[in-house]
Image (tube, rainbow, N blue to C red; front, side, top):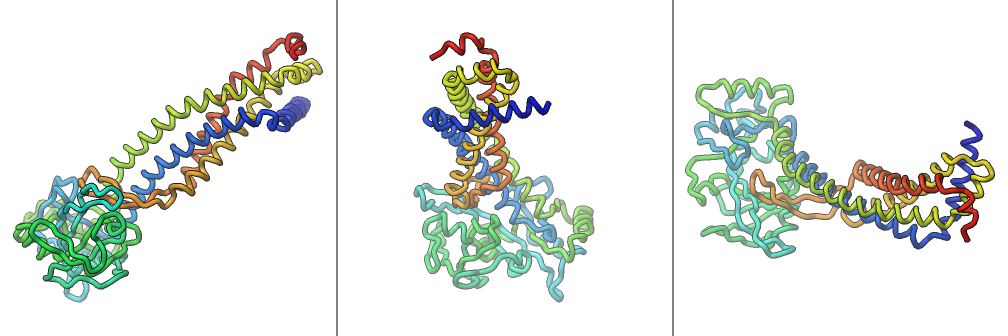
Amino acid sequence: MIRWIRQTLAVTALNLKTIHRRLGSSAVSIVGIAGVVVVMVSVLSIAEGFQAAMEASGSPSRALVMRAGADTEMTSGLDGAEADVIKQAPGLLQDGATPVASAELYVLIDLPMISTGTPANVPMRGIEPAAMRVRDEVSVVEGRMFAFGTNEVIVGRAAARQFRGLTLGNRIQSGQHTWEIVGIFEADGGVAETELWADARTLQGVYRRGNSFQLVAARLDSTGAFDTFRDWLTSNPQLEVQVRRETEYYQSQSQTMSNLIRTIGYTIAGLMGIGAVFGAILTMYTAVATRAREIATLRALGFNASSVVTSVLVEALVFGALGGLLGGVAAYFAFNGYQTSTMNWQTFSQVAFAFQVTPRLLASGILYALTMGMVGGLLPAVRAARQPIPAALREL
């Protein structure tokens, strides 16, 4: 065993020392693998960023109350009387005698995207005064909070970056109504930053919704109070509602889109990986052919065929590792933090988020690169071990 290890190390070292002689063909293989890793990591970073934006919006100390059977707040509906009953539930945080809960309305308005000018469905949320206590991560960072009972709005930071006209002091038109932007807010990178916030009562009047809402966002007095809060509401004969933790709701919202993006990413990477593997095979066949006499000489001197196979595979893995590192670094600097937006197909509204090239994605990219290198080096390694020694020694 020790003899085999020594032989393998010796042959491998010889292979690696002569890589510079095959720099051209080696570079082709490395760049091909790097290209696959760049595409794979960049596409999957979209799913990571989208999911992170959605999940950052949730808190285990908040609950969302919607109509029973509704998948999203777009398909939910509650009247004012039901909202008042919901605010009486035990387990709800109280600010003195005022429940920390906000009955909210959710509508979509058309605004052009800055990058393309194409119209997009931008969510506008009508809130009640308690909303800022319910979502305590939200803070106005420019301008001021809007005045309730007016046509003033505040705009999320991500929305201001992605859609035209959402600048402080500007006015935007929605149907027959004009809204004045008086503030910009942040929400720790959550999906709320894609929204515009206005007074719920004003929004009801503009869209002729009467005294109706789509959900009640409630802050619990503790994370453990959720079951008490939910059970009281779902057993109340005055209501037909469902209650979900906010974290659970946004996690389910992210799954469909994230799974779709990951499927596309892995499919593209798989198809491109086939081409990269053929490139690696050609590179390693060239490497074996140019060293045929060296390999035959080593085998004639008593080196094991398995040592030759291992040395060729190690060289292929080195190419894969270099390609994976190159592709991972390129993807990180080109895409990590890149701001964009996409359609949330469950609410048909735009969600702004940033690409996230995570350590897990980089590790996956490098692992895939090593796999491509291994597969690409397998057949040439077997050929190197099986070539007839006398014929190889006669090659010029």
